[in-house]
Length: 149
Image 1 (cartoon, rainbow, N blue to C red):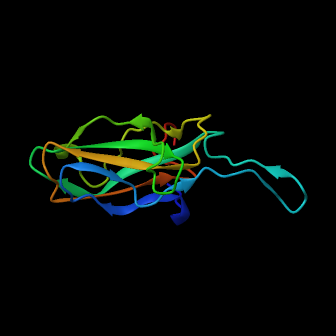
Image 2: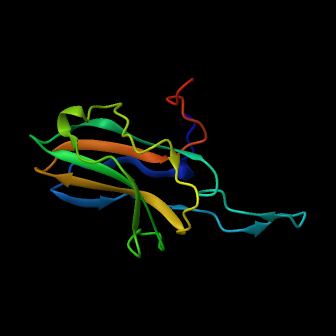
Image 3: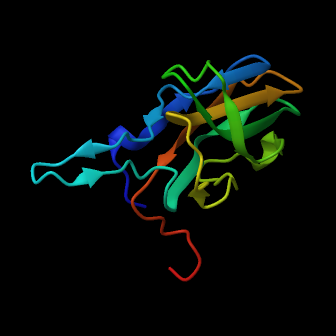
């Protein structure tokens, strides 16, 4: 997987938390249109063409019989708190499955055609509190877990 720190929404984000909803530490700007040095109009690409996403456990979760759900979201502000929209969701995943290296199945790409300004992730911890667990998530240049690679 080819990663860029500017395209990470969660970089080893600690989700050893109580039952609740948590937003990724950062959001990623979709990219506004701009003009390059030659006068060409450059259009922001995130949401206009297939952009690979990833979300994976980096530290094994612990929390009795708890569950975690990961969601790809967009909103009108960096804090992902204004007009938040959920685009893809994993559904609840049992803590027993959330071992280091586990990849959440959110779809392979940011959906095409979504126009919200900023992207990120939301995590829902349910059933019981988590005493351990970290996640890294964002967009990537290439995903080596894709079929045929």
